[in-house]
Image (cartoon, rainbow, N blue to C red; front, side, top):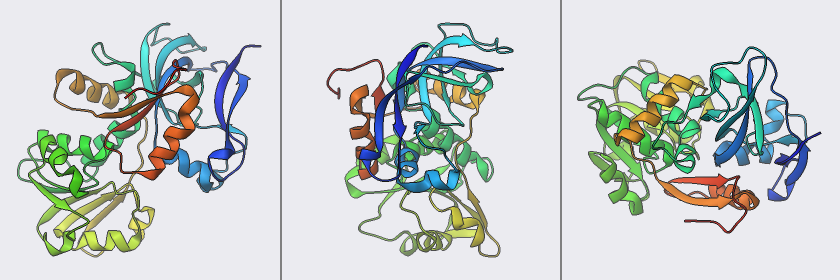
Amino acid sequence: MSLQKAYRLHSYGGPECVQLDDVEVPEPGPSQTLVAVHTVGMNPFDWKIREGFGRMMGLQLPTTLGVDFVGTVEANGDGASRLAAGERVMAISNTLGAFAEYIAVDEATLARVPEGLSDVEAAALPIPGLTAWQTVHLAGEPGPGMRVLINGASGIVGSLAVQLVKAAGGYVIGVASGKNRDYVLKLGADEFLDYQGERVENRFTDVDLVLDYALAGSPDDTARLWTVLTPGGAVVSVADPTILDNVPAGYRGYFHQAVPDAAALEEIANRVVAGDLTITIAQVFPRDRLIEAMELNKAGGTTGRLVVDFTDTTESRH
């Protein structure tokens, strides 16, 4: 029996509920691939599960946390043959389990990591990249002249969305903290609004699409966003799951969480390598400081992706 290190949730609550345990290395089942994990990205989903969202998912504890990962193919189960041992891959796990040295996932969810993209850089892409890609296209293709307001434009998802909308010819209004003004404008935003000093509904009434990545979202917050839209406009939210219950007549509302899409993830990665998309890494932590990285993600305010290197047991890098 081979053992590995894995961060498992033993009960719901604070960081003390997550422990680094010795567990069995999984065997890849039919159509599955076993991946040796190199890097993982920190997501709000991780600490939300820890604090109780896992109850709604019906999780059986203890369970290994972690949603997205980068690594190399270790072995294939029956019926899995698309990827060869040693190939670098990245993905979203539908069943958690990424905060471990090895993970077995459906082969179809795995995207190849292109040459020119490091494991740390790739760790910025699965959840953030697919969230940005899928939400940007969910309400219709953004085109030349479309006015798009991006709430949370300085976050890792919002920063990618700014660039994707600009690449499609859209007009981007970036909303974030004032300290991130220069960063958001450098990404390509045409206008910037500091949400701490001005309310969006007091400035805009002609927006075609709102992309809401503000993770403190609530029905009251979302209600303010409808007022900035032109008739027929849409709000796409990753923050407020009640949005579908409160769509005003004449408008469109969508709630979305990223789903695996290997082809789209490879397209995003290729754009990064080509220089068409920029990603920002805020900090890289060694494996033994994953809980610290999770707490920093929860605190918010970080510009860029927090990454944990599962191959590194030294001090954190910047």
